[in-house]
Amino acid sequence: MKLFLLTYDRKRGQLLGIDEFDPGEYVSANRALLAKEFAHPDLEIVLLEAASQDQLRLSHRRYFEGPLLQAV
Image 1 (cartoon, rainbow, N blue to C red):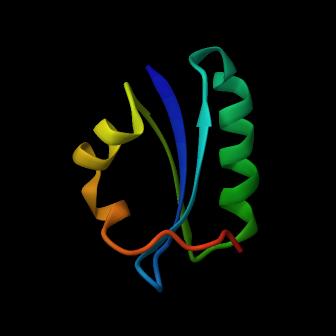
Image 2 (image 1 turned 90 degrees about the vertical axis):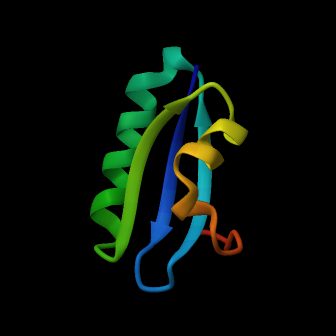
């Protein structure tokens, strides 16, 4: 399983970026989550676990409905 940190713009309804971490990088992933979460109040930052990005796209489809935008 891998960890995926998704940055989602609530106002635009679009995914801004995906950062992928190995399971051993859990602490680093959480630090990145906290840093992004407090940087922009309009962003939804989530840390999810999945076997692959394809599985993540199936289980959390709403984040992937719009085009992937460049992170702010």
